Image (tube, rainbow, N blue to C red):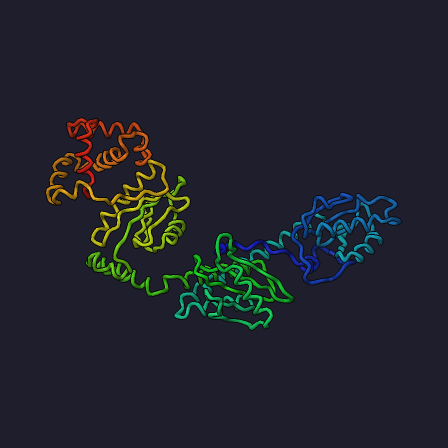
Length: 488
């Protein structure tokens, strides 16, 4: 998805600079093209300014570099050709203190190379010309930002209408003075607004849409192409769903890409899954649970019977942001996501089985029904802790038959409560002991899993041993504690 960034600073029309009466500039050679623009002003007295130009400049010179016999040779022709080759937009020649008039040979060379030549009167300083360029650029930028802001507001208002997609397309076409088209995943035109384009441009826009349609790694999210009198652009919408926004305009202003990008973001949301019945079902499930319904009652609305819970942490030290979390959930194939501080939790159907995700460490619960979601959540948390401790991309919580299956549920719970009664108000001790046992008594791995110092782990385990009055080095004691700690 293209980022709707701030538009670049627009260049200044050369005609606007010539219209400044305080400067008194006069064009004396070269084409008078209204489309000629200046990106900045640069002063140089180099005989060959080519290495110091970026292109688009109004190059200002007082002719200090001109030798006395320049008019009889090829000096001016060589000089102007180098300015043109560097992409210079225009040349300003200052009268005084070196020259009283613009050399005729320079005028002829600018005519031959079609480079606009401006006469700068003695009363006008080069710094004054540069300041005027920057003033005009600031005015143009302010106007462009205002245009983009107004367009963003109108597009947002259009997206809130009862017919949001056609409304956004109509508003975009109006703001850009062209045509806006929404292509579906199969390449067919779903909706369009604005000026009609010819068959050739329509075909070219359709082809450009195929360039950005997701087809694998490396597919661009936007593309553009210019034909005679028409500028074409295409923007891929959403996370691989195949919708594309196409735009055809008679010209391309600095803020047009920003405006089109805002429309692309809005259309991505409007064509996304949240506009489908599945989102309505998820909303209904949430409301029912808030009003007292059980997980078993709302699970059918979410489209699955068997589930897993995934806990994920990014491999970077920063906390996950909502955008990254949403991308992870989309990759796992579920919109049911929760971002809680440094952990992202995702509830998703058990099939297909979740796999490793680049840049993330995952803990996956055992397969569970709706009544077991809370248990699965705890399992995913433990699996994530172990994955981080052993530096694995993904760890699945074991769901194999265990000793607990041989003991009646009530007896097992009573035993666990009795054994761990002294930890009832000390969850940090319980978590530390559980993690330490799961990692075979490794101080370092436990510290990594819990995000604490290894000395903190040692202190907590020592306190556990004191409270329990047990030898934690005894394998029988460890087995009994592990049995109790695995209870939900």
